[in-house]
Image 1 (cartoon, rainbow, N blue to C red):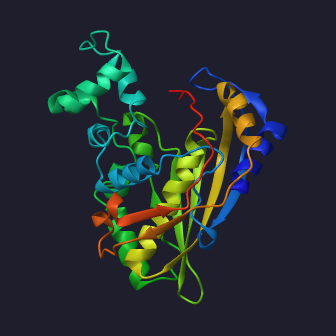
Image 2: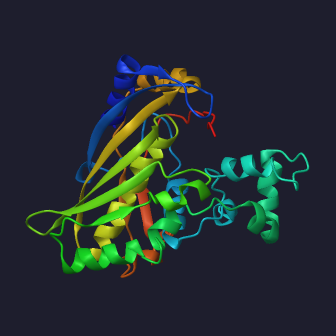
Length: 290
């Protein structure tokens, strides 16, 4: 994952201070690109441990079209909890619960989760129901029937519904590409806003996993994940954590195998995948800015 470390160095050396909506402050740049060849291994960050289960379960959740955090909470995945909690503390139902107490209520009480666990029409909603269009189903059909189309596109950015979302999509637009020999499938993501320390390692792994799944369903070999950024930044309270990572030597990438093929992309689950050879440096905790 030298590509990721090069991105970190680029921002530390060339980034400029900017204020942001969270009031945390960042240093950042505009416009950057990384490429990952999946034939060389699965790009799961090795300079700090990245929780593959959370990456996978979030992606499966997106693919269901669900926008309530309860299915993730029930699986022990915490990555979306802060956003509905931030809304809950402003609600009349708020009784001084901590974030952990809020999450326990989401887990134990479906009616409470239905009221307070929703994120609005975020990724899964747009992927599966963009004003009635199921973009995932359409993508799979087109990749099978018309592989060399230049329209293999999925957009999570829906201007008409941005104000309804707890967080407008950061990874906003993707395009798939079939090689000239008809054998290999690549994916490029445009990410409008990128939290380099917390978010980007997840995004790399998530879209690489999605590429593998789409390739498996459509009969292609997963080839290259291209990660293109707009505003790419490090939050001020993460700078020392990023510097710590830069002191660590990257280790060999793990291998991710698909154990069971499915005809439908919606049938995959965590048990269908085997991650081997993952030997990362220890986890580094950082606070999310909401």
